[in-house]
Length: 283
Image 1 (spheres, rainbow, N blue to C red):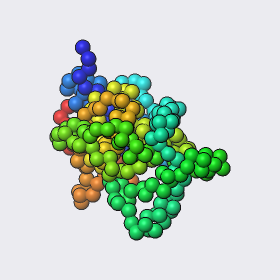
Image 2 (image 1 turned 60 degrees about the vertical axis):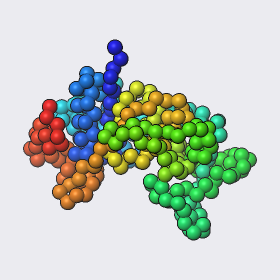
Image 3 (image 1 turned 180 degrees about the vertical axis):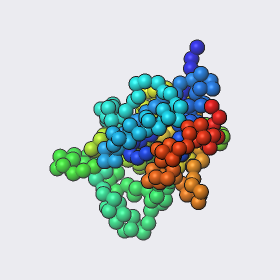
Image 4 (image 1 turned 90 degrees about the vertical axis):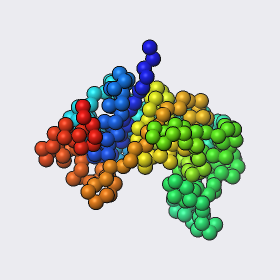
C-alpha cells in the first residue's frame, strides 16, 4: 500500500530555531503522524558563508526536545552539490540557462539607466543585461575567469512548457503559477553550482515529498518552482504556506531574535508540551 503522505522539515543551519520554525516542523510531523505517513528532516546547508555545524547540532537538539522523530539518514544538501550541478548543466545544454556576469551594482546601474524596472516578488526584476550576449562573448568572459551566475531564461522556459501551470495550496485551493513575478531568476552560482530554488525542487522530488509546508514568505518562490518541476518532468507536491509567527509587537520572528529561540525558551524553563500547546498542537 503506497504511503499517503510524506512531509519534511528543511531548515538551514544559519542560526537557532525559533517558534516559526517549530510551527512548520510540528505541522509537518503531526500531519504525517496522523495518517501513518513519513516525516523527513533535510538540512539545507548550501550557504557556506552562513551555515555552521553548531547550528545544525542545535537544530537536531531542539527538534528532539520538541518530541519529533524523523527518518534516518538525514539528507544534507552540501553532500550532493554534484547532483544539483548536473541538473543545472542539463538545463543549460537545453538553452534554458545563460551565464550572467552582472554584479548587484551593475544591475542597479542598468535599472537606473533604463529609468526603472518592473517589480516582482523579490524586488526589481533582472533587466536581462546578459541574456543577449553571444555564445562567443560568454565563452570569452568565462575563459577570462569572470564570476558569473546561471539565470533561467524564463521566456524560453515558458515557451518550451507551452501551457499554464498551477499548484494546489492547502487552505487556498488551486493557484495559477505566475513565474514572471520572479523573472530570470538565478538557479546556480559559480561557487556552489546550485541555488535554493534548484536544490529544493530536486530534493523534494527525489525524496518523494507529497506535501511541502513552509512559511508564507516563500509563497512567491513556488511560482518559479512549478516552472522547474515542469521543465524537469517532476511530480508536483501539495503546498501549505502558513502564516508567519510574530512576537508580541506583531513583528515577524527571525533567527536574530534570541528571546524567541527554542533554546532560550528551554533554558527559561518552558516545557516541550507548553511550546507545542502554544503553537496549537496537543500531542
